[in-house]
Length: 126
Image (cartoon, rainbow, N blue to C red):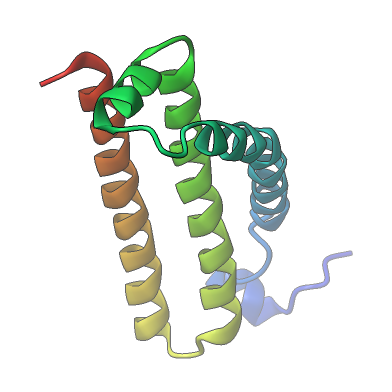
């Protein structure tokens, strides 16, 4: 027995089963941010008072560029997922909703990409 009306079946409206995947991805990125943020805060405290040369050396050593890249990617992706939920839940105008969703994704990609580029530039020089 199907719960949708005949009109809903014709229009194709109803659940797309996308919510569970979105929910899990938001939880996984949130859990991944915990150890990454602990590492970053610990590192930032140890870098207090360092000059630019010391910071560049820190960025380019050990696994720091990889961890910084993971932190940036996870942070922007998690933020974009959270804003997507807020926009979908609280913006009623479809045109404004679509505009905000596209803008949010675009801003997250641009800022995240630029931040990762900055880490790579600090790592490899230039």
